[in-house]
Image (cartoon, rainbow, N blue to C red; front, side, top):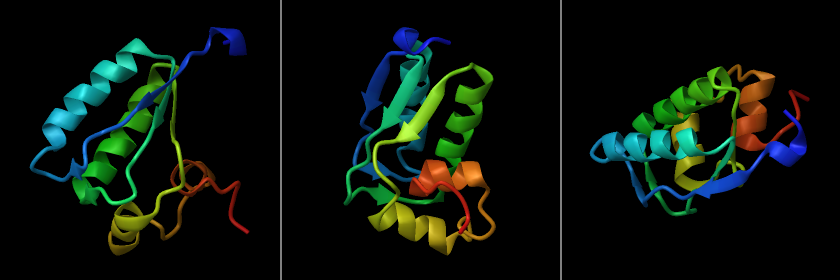
Length: 109
């Protein structure tokens, strides 16, 4: 797809990204992804995050790739998001694509 055809839009989820609200966040994110070719997710540094949000983002990445769309985080994971990634063991053995998405790193050094 030519770069001129890509429209980049930002999605800012709510502060609470836990199992209690994840169904609503999922619905909103799917609606957003269906309307755009390229999505940037902007997380607040002090948002509440649990593993359900990490799972949602992984599912969103798969969904976007299957639909030929791009999805990215506006900033590398930090604060509570990075803490959940660490505690869940997700950072262990990350692929190059995972490193790029979650930490904005080009590859394993």
